[in-house]
Image (cartoon, rainbow, N blue to C red; front, side):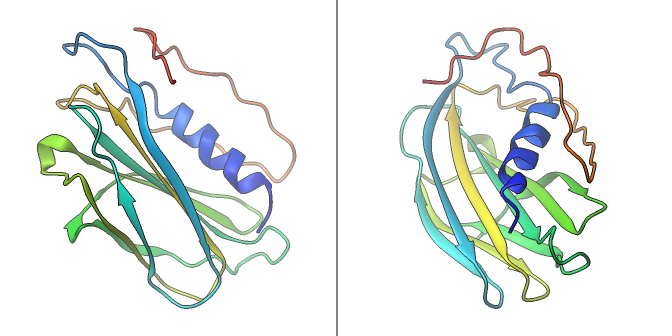
Length: 169
């Protein structure tokens, strides 16, 4: 898997806008984070705990395929946390064979404090996934609009306006 995929996933997440903290008096913070890589068949599973804070949001990012072997990226069919379906917030495909996905689950949607993340996907391509949970997130509108861009060459991206300020400890 190309080392550019984690950067692509980060840029896509930043392009989504802000983790809204309006109506929540405290700054947004990071609860916990983890990542896993799988080269075998579906599903990719890993345990995850996010038991700190309130108004939590779980974000799972998934990168698939290989820029050195175009056309091998599979597709994600479902992501669950502790058996509960997560919502797809966005996806993007590169011209050189990679795909990225972002899925979310909020505390208001009944997110438990711990469980297993399960990612079902097609094809035997390399899959890399990460889970990060945030606290003090506006539960009514946790994310801004999704935006994406891809390029087979080096690219730059501007950071979005994230007002009110987000403090990631």
